[in-house]
Image (cartoon, rainbow, N blue to C red; front, side):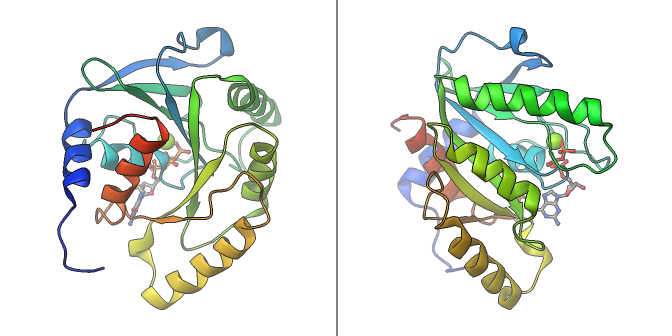
Length: 216
Ligand SMILES: Nc1nc2c(ncn2[C@@H]2O[C@H](COP(=O)(O)OP(=O)(O)OP(=O)(O)O)[C@@H](O)[C@H]2O)c(=O)[nH]1
Ligand SMILES: [Mg+2]
């Protein structure tokens, strides 16, 4: 990382996300989804990949989204509103690929997520989080395939970058980027982040605002 400070745009984005962020609602079923009044950005990824932590880092909060040590805790679509008045919503999705989840729970999750991702007009962008230590797993590929069939493009976000050496990080990101090329709906540009260290968060905030069409 260079020693340069944040750009004016990144500072403005940080200011917006440090301002009003409120938990709106938790939707365990489609009928509980809020009216699609503002653009939404969805956070998808394997259980324990760091979705809630990333949402906390983006909003400069410690625990607005529950970050758990128990994998698979987020079972609903959790909506957070940003801005005063609200300019966009962040959606914390349930994690997939949790081996211990009962089949019925997995089926319910798949149906909820698939229907939301395929049919949500307000969905501006999906972020697919991938653990930097592990790279893409088959469940991620399955998710990406499903997203390729939706009208919404997605950004791949590597998480927990602080947990591996720079050389390994380079190798994993090169592999993931190469594979992402084969997915029609994947953005060519990848994000490398650490919620713990704040790495890549400034850039991701401005990307989210651009995706949501929010000018700052
Ligand atoms: N070192 C490090 N740990 C992280 C980072 N992000 C998340 N973690 C840890 O990883 C674990 C899971 O993080 P969560 O944010 O709860 O993951 P999640 O994807 O929301 O998990 P589910 O909601 O259960 O699917 C927690 O113990 C976090 O503290 C990171 O950037 N660096
Ligand atoms: Mg979570």
